[in-house]
Structures are given as structure tokens and as C-alpha cells.
Image 1 (cartoon, rainbow, N blue to C red):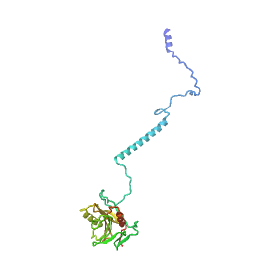
Image 2: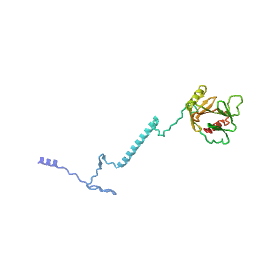
Image 3: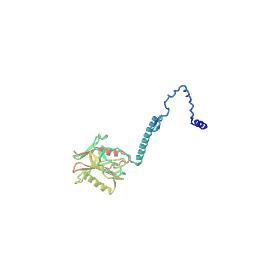
Image 4: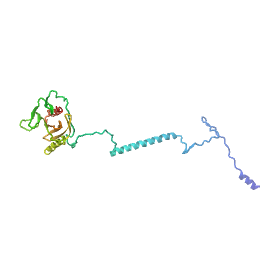
Length: 264
């Protein structure tokens, strides 16, 4: 009997004491009976109520990385000198470049036109060849080699001395003897280069025609222009004007050059 009593005592499982749920707090709703309160889960785990906010942050992070990559690439190209150049229209030029240290390296333009301040000037014309205008104070002389010289002394020029002050321009028409205009200009350039500092010939426009020009520099200074009147006649213009007192002779010679016309 004692063994049976012991077994009965060992087989009895105490029933847990049920407790009544506490009433809900005022202002809150009681959970529905039978509804589980376990948080919902997604594939990645527990649902985060701020999931939408994290998506926005992720987008901003990606944009930030893209901007950083662009800035880094720009810095690289700027530092390496590999910045792409804008494509510009292709242009062609016939100008022959002179060394950078030579001041006579740009194309000279001397097209026939109405030049301000020359309205009352005189006109010299060699029929069928060329013409130019010159100031009333200028003096015209013709020489045996066919040169026509217009000159005007400056305030410091003395008689019986070398020319160093005033206007001096010569015009000479000659037969090129089969040489091209460039060959003619190059030949004169090489002759003068043996004695004086001389710039290389460059393409020039005289009286609206394409020609060549170069400069003799130093104490003996002059600008040489070569232009074709036709196939058998070339015109040489030498501007040896000097203006040590800034009396305006340089401007005068430039205006004379601008009034040159070729042909009839």
C-alpha cells in the first residue's frame, strides 16, 4: 500500500494555477483573444519599422559615391593634362611662321581703302602698274633703277648725314625673270641676312593681293614687301621710315601702304 501511494504521489502533475489577466490600462486596447503578439518577420529577419527611411539613406549613399567618383576622375584628368579638348572647325593658313622672338611674325594687311586723314593727300600713279597716296609735305623722286621714293625729313634730320629721322618709302617695279614671288622674297632675305639681322619672310597682303614681307632690324631698319602686279611684273616696297621723336612719321607710312593699289 505504501508503494502504491508513493506511485500515485509521483504521477500527479500539479496543475498550474491560472491567473486572471489584468484589466487593460485606461486609454489602451486589450489584445484580442487568440491573436499572437509575436513581431512579424521578413525574409531578412524581424521587420524594421524604419525600412522606408533606410531605403532613402541607401539611395543618398549611392549618389554620394557617384559624385565622389566624378570628382576624383576630374581631378585626375586635370592633374594629368588629359582634359578633352573641344572640337573646333579645321582652318588652314598659308602663313609661314617666323621664330617667336621676331616681332615681324604676323601677317601684314594693306588693302586699298579710304584711309582716314588722307582725303587731301596727293596721288602718285604709274600707269598700268601701281598707285599710292602721300601727304602734301612729302617729296617724290625717281631714280635710274626705276625706284620711286617719297620722303619727308624729320625735325632732327641734318643735311649731308645718313638718314635717321623722317618718312622714307620706295616703290620699284621689276621683272622677276621667271622666279616665283616666294623665291624672289627669299633671295632678297638671304642677301640681307648676310649683313643685317633679318626676320624670315611671312605671308603679307598688299593692296588686296597675297605677297611676302620681312624686316631688317637693328640700326639699319626697314620693312620689305613683295607683291605681284601680274605674271611678269613684281612690286617691291621698302619702308625705311624712322621716327625717333614720335612726330607721326610711322603712322604716315602705314597710311601710305594702305592706299596702294595695283594695275590700271
